[in-house]
Length: 151
Length: 361
Image 1 (cartoon, chains in turn yellow, blue):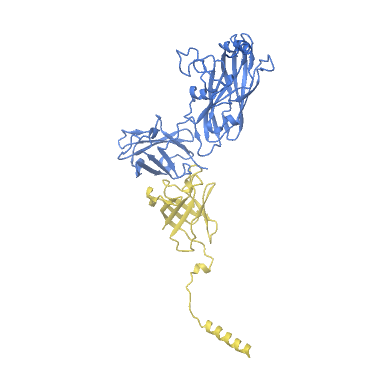
Image 2 (cartoon, rainbow over the protein chains, first blue to last red):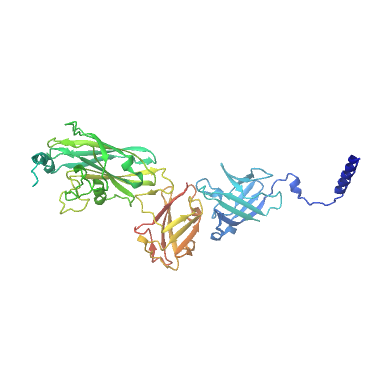
């Protein structure tokens, strides 16, 4: 008798829960494998050196990074960028690729025989990205820089 | 009344010739074989070639004295071994070859006659050899942080060799210490009887005056692997008048140059103290030994006042100096001026720019 009573109670609760009709809005790109899209023209917004903002010392808006297909272009060589180091072969244009098209953490800039890996400072969405953060060293590995680009 | 001691008199009479016959003799350093460069931690050998002319002095109790000018941080007194060799071999008790011992009474008042230094006038000073070397001899092209360390032959030498010229060597084995990327080392050789005596102490009272009783020689050495904070002792002394941040940087980094107008010579203010405006004059020394000069006091070189007489300028050197492809910056040579260029501040105490290299571990 007791077993029948518990069974009846359980079935009632199960139906009661099933009546919940609340719906969640879920981003489509979280359910599907969508490549992170960062194509377009990015304008440098801020520079930090060892976590200190030093943007005021430079005309950051003069640095634009254009990612088009597999190609990239830098608009200026008057501001530092990992591909512009004098200790290597500096290049303003070339190819680029993520380490992982779907969940990238590193972007590789390639020019001639040189490949320069640059860390992303935060994850990217599949679409509608409006911020791109890069972290790198320029000369001495003890000093790190963060560039924040905006569209 | 104290009884006269005839034994003491006898000993004194026997020693009298030894003491009074210290008249002359001639030392010449004829060559120094020293590596042009060495690595920190490396053990190196240095050979000093010495020509000795007895000038018919005929002493049988002659201590050879040798001095080295070295960085203090190397602690050579603890780390070096010194041996000398010559063809003199008259008695085994007083050999012409053997070990040299580090000054056992450095900085103290010596009691043993072989440890008693003689000054420019040839008279005993009451000091040790090490003390007088540091008082009398110069430190070459070094700006400081070096010391003379003296050694003497472990045993006296029997030099009753007539009027003879002898070639010998003094060989030093030492461990290269840390702290400096370059130094001019020095060598001094003489003997206990004349010490630092000059040819004519009344006419020539400077240590650089020629003396045949002793000789000195200086030679530079470059040190590799000395670390980012190492200084070249032959360059201008480090100054806090100008500095570069961040702490670790190469010239591909964004660097901030700081000029402190309060940090002049010997703690005084610089000539730009309380200046209304300051510009940076900079020369970039390139890897191919060419230079790029930016000293036109333009807007880009204008510094910003960030504290009490502290001025700063943040630049990315490759763009600031328009470094051509394939070249790199190895040093920055800096001076600072007011707006119209009538006041110029260089390295305090020197008539040269402040030199800053890379600093990255």
